[in-house]
Structure formats: structure tokens, C-alpha cells
Length: 68
Image 1: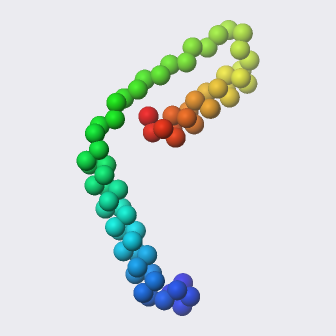
Image 2: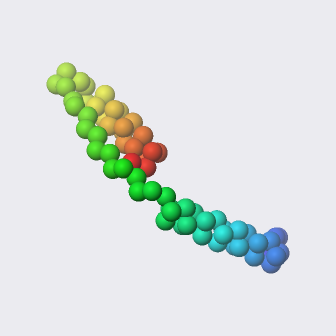
Image 3: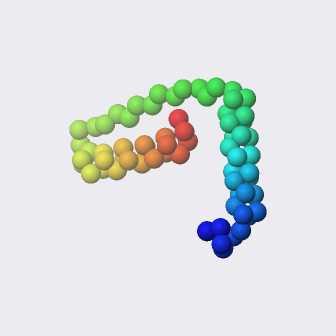
């Protein structure tokens, strides 16, 4: 990889990555704590198993995206 990009480019990429990680860590430390949210879904007897699985999957995906 060094033959293609050269040492300077690789060093610059590493410095940029370190700077990005440091800024991200500082932002996390200074950010106010997130409010914990507990959500519950109520299932009914007449739902199909497939529909329940799909609803659960979508719900979990939303929770992961929002970071709750």
C-alpha cells in the first residue's frame, strides 16, 4: 500500500483519524447524559407470528439507529 500512496499520505490519514477520534471522545464527555427510555410493545392474540417478527425487527432497528 505504501508504494501506491506513499508515506506522507498514510501518515496524514493516520493523523486525521486520531484527530477525529479525539474530538469524538471529547464531545461524548461534554455531552449531557441521555435520558433512558423504556418502551414496551403490547401484542394481541390475533396477530400472525410473521407480523410480530417483522414488527419486532423494525422496532429493534429503530432503537439501534436512535441509540436508545
